[in-house]
Image (cartoon, rainbow, N blue to C red; front, side, top):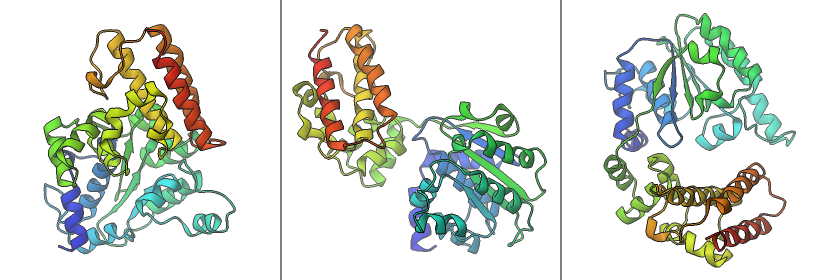
Length: 339
């Protein structure tokens, strides 16, 4: 096994490996793997694709070292079609089509954040071609909810009458946004939520210390993949625990290296936990000892609504620095009122 394949195998969480084995034991030409973010929809979908096309696959999945597995790892497999927003394809190392790459390189447009209908039409044409390696073909769609209605309808007919040697796996973090006709033509699988102990063990294998893993796993609401992303974000885990007190003090320096979307996400989680404690429920993202005194729900509800509105424009703020100051000021005013 090559170093790359060994690293990939080691990075696959055990609960993803278990689900891969379960799904491989069932028959079907189209799967929809669904659940909240951070549970591993994409790794599970890719594991299925690897196993379907592997030259020496077992009941547990792909071998990890055959020519097919290597081709997938280096993103050159002729029988794999990946449908993603162009921003996600670039982030995950999948090549864009020649036309799309040329348009982006020439600055005619920015990479798309949704799955383009042109890419879907290419995928439909791909599904009708003869397999290059003779082991069938696979189409991976992620996140499937990024298909607009036109794109989804372009896929629908192929899902209804699929060519004999092609399999589909759609991975989604918001399956309710998919067309009912898309959902009805796929075998559904709800992602397994791993235990905290299993998540902690896996995070430690990824180089996250036990204290940091505990903080980030809580910050991610128990979602291990999201926790790993937080651990790799460059932020100090202690800064998360100190965030509520920093917001009470209006300390902008505590979040000066944060992006507006990251801060909004953190403040929404803080608001959630304060609403929970206001109704005598347990907080989810922060320790009870780190939270300010219980606030009246009348003070928290407008803040929650304002944060939701800010989230809609957070990706393109006019001035990120000013937006951070505004968010911190609003948090300070809320946390020091309505007690």
